[in-house]
Length: 119
Image 1 (cartoon, rainbow, N blue to C red):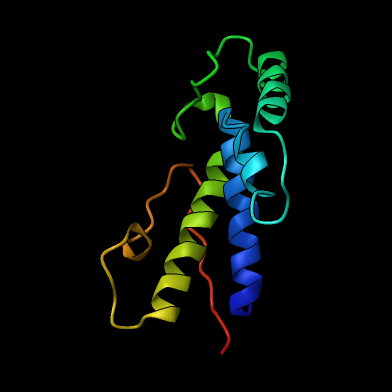
Image 2: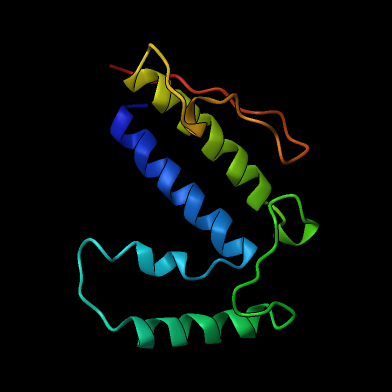
């Protein structure tokens, strides 16, 4: 896949994983670079949606990625890590100190996938 395709895939996997964990406010972050909106209204509706789906969680609480409640979000997060790692090394072959350069670690029972980026 191309670098741009990998970035889009990574963002989609990150969003899916976070929403399945209960981090609904992540949805609004998709739009902040492009739109002006009333955070109070957006937060109210996202919090209401979260309460409807996860009534057991407090407003600022969410499930960790290792919790069984997140289901296949574990697989999505694993793929996200692999793509993030590949992109980091593709952009900067000398390495770096951010988490992007760390070896991905599996959160699911599935083997980690492999990725090949095209120039």
